[in-house]
Image (cartoon, rainbow, N blue to C red):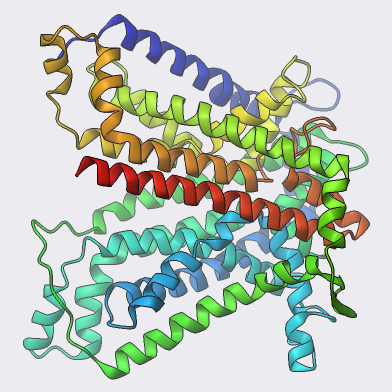
Length: 541
């Protein structure tokens, strides 16, 4: 392989500086702050006080309880949907609807989920009106469970669905021909090869639920969870930085344990030498059962968001259902709300552009250069994958509180880039690893330096991945609240944090209009990126 070039080392040093300045240093500041007492001393008194706080212990227990229930339900539903898409012969339009519809919650801020649940299942909710009575109490455990399942289902489904691609369906047919009973065949040919993915979906769902702030902020009620405890400690009437730091450190433990468990579960993944294209035999009972189940799950999930698209267009839901444009025009006539939406666009675009450049550069160094120490990037990506958004945001607040970065768009963008680094990094690394390893050598022989080879050859062959990375960063920057709740100022407020503010004034029409605006913006960006990806694929052919 070619030798390391000065430009490689320059990029590597820049990336290392970024990680040390905006990941390692903030986390160290958070960790050390958790030991600093109010009188300026140091010790374990903050931890002793926290662990003797009944409200905090109760909140941690509540988080574990609701997150555990969410993980079980989500993993079961995600597996059911993935099985319906990959291992049945249900109608193709239904399969397509599942694969597209399941992604819709990812385009909406999690804090909106709670308000949608309120307007769907509350005393005057859409489904309450249809059924003529309250179906259940929505505030507390029930509301959190519904919101968390909707929030985590898309990610869990994508994980299991992608794993299904590496299962050879020929073994399902062979098992049947050998006389295995349905349950035995199902366990050995489907469940057993997917144990790693199922475990991963469970861990992912648990961590996402445990660390989310948006849903508890809107529908948690008096059922305290650890995320709301952290929010109250930092943004209450008297901010308690030491207590907030302790809670943030405690929030890291489930995430770290989850990553360790994920690495352990990797050993259960199957690796087939080759795959065969196999058409499964029809089964009326199997196809009917999974087809109906998939349709019910999808409709149930989407029905929660139906009210979000109805409320902005009626005069006063649910009392006056006459059509009106008043709420829509009101948003665009409000300079404050237009400014907030513009802020979100600025943050999302900067996050997507800078994040894609930094992440692609890191993946490029790791996958296609011989530079020493490049494995450090993998370590950094594992760290970012374990740090919840609220914890990272708080660590930035503690470290940069008295700096010129405080209250700027730049600090929000940097936090988003670090928070969501892992997934786009792995996207780029996997794509770059699969490319011809001799391109750089050929470029050198033709007189091109490494940068020119990357620009002329490697980048054009990875445009599809770059677009996917851009889309991922943009969408997540538009919907996140956990990562930015401690960092926004009056001048840099984004839509997700504004929604959190509007709920205190019961301005739900504005909340839903802003949520629809975010959804349509994300949908447009996804559609444009998908169209460009297809165009790139056609051009390559």
